[in-house]
Every structure is written in C-alpha cells, then in structure tokens.
Length: 210
Image 1 (cartoon, rainbow, N blue to C red):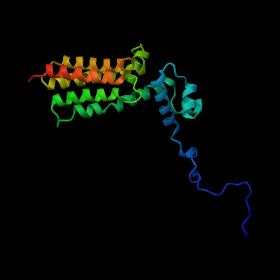
Image 2 (image 1 turned 45 degrees about the vertical axis):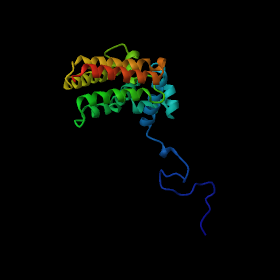
Image 3 (image 1 turned 120 degrees about the horizontal axis):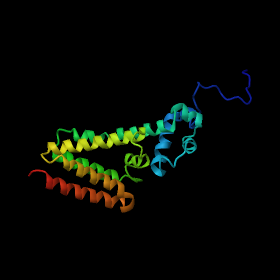
Image 4 (image 1 turned 90 degrees about the vertical axis):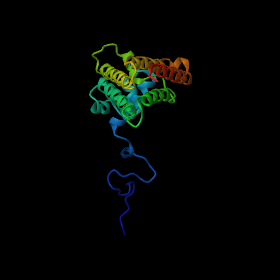
C-alpha cells in the first residue's frame, strides 16, 4: 500500500501545470511582456507620461525584472521604436514589387497609408509621436524615428523618379501622408483616410506622364 502524502501536490514533470490551468511557465518571457505593455502604454498615453512602475504593473513583473531585460527606459524605448520601423517593412515589399508599375506602386503606398489611418485605436504615427516627444536630435529614440522618416522620403522620391515624375512629388506625398497621420485624431480617422487617398491620387495622376 502506497504512503499517503497529505498536503503534497501530485508528481509532475518540472515546469508542467495541471491541465486547464495557466501558470508562470505559460507566460511569455519577461522581455516580451515588458515590450508589449510599454508599446501599448507609450502609444496610448505618451512615452514621457508612462513611468517604469506602470509598465511593470502592466507586464506583471518587477523593476528588477524589467532592468534585467532592458538596462534603461531609453533602451526599451529604442527597442520598441525599432520594432515599429520593422513592422512598416511592408512598404519596402510594395515598392520593390516589380510585378507592379511604378504608378501602381505609388498608389499602393498611398492606399496602405490610408488603411493604416483606419486601424482601430489609431492616434497618429508612433514614430512621428516620438519625434514630437524627443526634440534632441541626438537622443537614440529620435535618431531611430528620424532615420525611418528619411528612408521613407528616399523611397518615395526614387519611386516617383522611376515613374517619370519629379522626385519632389515624393516629398509632397510624404507631406500628405504625415499630415493625415497627424490630423486623424482631430478630423476623424475615416475623414483623414479619405482625404489622403483623394488628394494623393489626384496629385499622382496630375504629375505622372500620360
């Protein structure tokens, strides 16, 4: 007859949880939880307005856990902004799609930006918002955001040149896109998206050779 082990949990493999019950081993890694929490809080209420304590509470970790994953808040900010840049790589896929004509690729870029404005909870471009929060051009977060905006400008200018239009058309399109991102919270996302598509399409058709 086996001994009764009153008050002891049944044997399980290390790290395994009872069926149907979530435990610590089911959670994403601390670094991921911190990034997810910070990304949402930074975007919703601003980077400077979000403290480390609030990020820790939302991520379900401690300050020690956060600083083990990221040496500073600035390092966390830089990582999140770089992820935002990487998430916009779809633009590079569109502009590099040689199955589309340059005109079609330009229109696709505008349409993608207009669709972004319609994303639920959209309150502006995260990188543009970061530029507004970090006036120092030498701050790592500002440098990440500036680099992305400059890369976007060069992409649009090159694409316009390929289509036979002045490269400055790319600057005009970027101004329309950035303007729609900026005014969407005040104008309304649907109105800003429609205005962007209409204005950009008209400008493209007027600027490209027949």
